Amino acid sequence: MDKPLRIAIAGLGTVGTGVIRLLETNRDLLTARAGREIEVTAVSARDRNRNRGVDLSRYAWEDDMTALAAREDVDLVVELVGGSDGPALALARASLGAGKHFVTANKAMIAHHGIALAKTAEAHEAALKFEAAVAGGIPVVKGLREGTSANALERIYGILNGTCNYILSKMEDTGADFGEILAEAQAKGFAEADPTFDIQGIDAAHKLAILAAIGFGARIDFDAVRTTGITQVKAADIAQADALGFVIRLIAMADTETGEDGRTRLLQRVRPCLVPKDHPLASVDGPTNAVVAEGNFSGRLLFQGAGAGDGPTASAVVADIIDIAREEIGAPFSIPVAGLEPMPPVEPGHRMERTYLRFTVTDRPGVLAEITAAMRDAGVSIESLIQKGRADDGGEVLVAMVTHEGPERCIKEALDLLDGSESLTDAPLVLPILRD
Ligand SMILES: NC(=O)c1ccc[n+]([C@@H]2O[C@H](COP(=O)([O-])OP(=O)(O)OC[C@H]3O[C@@H](n4cnc5c(N)ncnc54)[C@H](O)[C@@H]3O)[C@@H](O)[C@H]2O)c1
Ligand SMILES: N[C@@H](CCO)C(=O)O
Ligand code: NA
Image 1 (tube, rainbow, N blue to C red):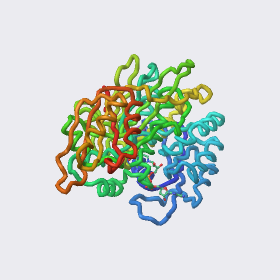
Image 2 (image 1 turned 60 degrees about the horizontal axis):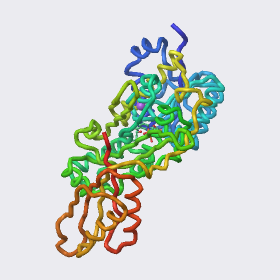
Image 3 (image 1 turned 180 degrees about the vertical axis):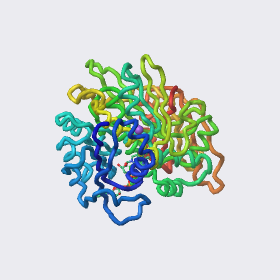
Image 4 (image 1 turned 60 degrees about the vertical axis):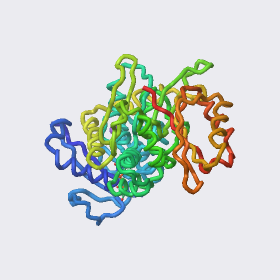
């Protein structure tokens, strides 16, 4: 048998502790699959004395995690700290620069610095792997790098944030308020250290940018992801969507089109959408994630499973370690960095969509006429419209509508016409309807 693969782990929180537990529990099976032993030699985290329920006494401890990269007894560094910059990035640069393989669950860092890190990895013939960074335990990075590699992909889309999905599906089941469910998701260990990354859609945007790069051969462009989170979604919208035959999910989607200049353009967006109840993504509940990839020969593929949590995320981290033990290095984004194409973003105004719109308005005569006139003037055709009762106190009521399919820019024009209207008491909510 080959020499053991010697690894160091930085970060011993939810995921780091899960990795240690998995390496211990499945030791024999991992040795057989990897073809050699996987041996932890050193670890680093903020607090040496915290009780994590795992025995760390056999491993060397480094207070400064960057020191792991310089250790002679380390072949591979695993980063489970988080943060796009700071110590995680310093560790990635130092490790790859020293020719050590590098495995991470850090989507923020890969979304911002993945290309530069992949270049360093290539230059030093080291592996850079991040299966756990996207959709936790689901092997979707591998699925796109290997499973769909024979296809031109038409679309990649799915549910990439477990916290938002947990909140939305819990709101659906219980009618409970947003805030208290977010606290539950935090307690269960799904949420990011700063949960605004989850609820504002930023975490899903990090993951989408990574998948788009792999799936479309694009240079990662995180700044081009058009991102809307779930904070504006009310329990009333969920009930309304239900009555219309939909659920609400935070959907991340990327596709491409050819611009007038002949260049391939990339559209990446994260937004809450109405999902028809018979769509496979509608039954994805709780912290589960799901990714759909549509290949020109494979047809629609659905990857589904746990997108967060210690066990599933550890499973993805250790799968990457096994690949490296087997010397399956590969290009981090499927093709060498020089081959990744810079793809300018699509301006999506011409895209055709059906849309759900919700207005919170003052309950007085003429309000509905004002809204429908704006729709008419902007060329938006209304498929159905619901006004929720009368407010007893003459206060606010909710007006919801679903439009026929039309160019996205018309919706924007209608909202611009209503901008500043004294009838609207809250910003309107616009939710596209996911098409099959
Ligand atoms: N929790 C999940 O379900 C999940 C799923 C997929 C990916 N991730 C990613 O995995 C990474 C780790 O997430 P987590 O949930 O385990 O986080 P966590 O907060 O539970 O653990 C982070 C660990 O890093 C250490 N750490 C943080 N800052 C440090 C610093 N400046 N110096 C030294 N040590 C430091 C902490 O002490 C802790 O041990 C993040 O990049 C996260 O986005 C998490
Ligand atoms: N905060 C992330 C963790 C998994 O990446 C989520 O909720 O999906
Ligand atoms: Na994954």
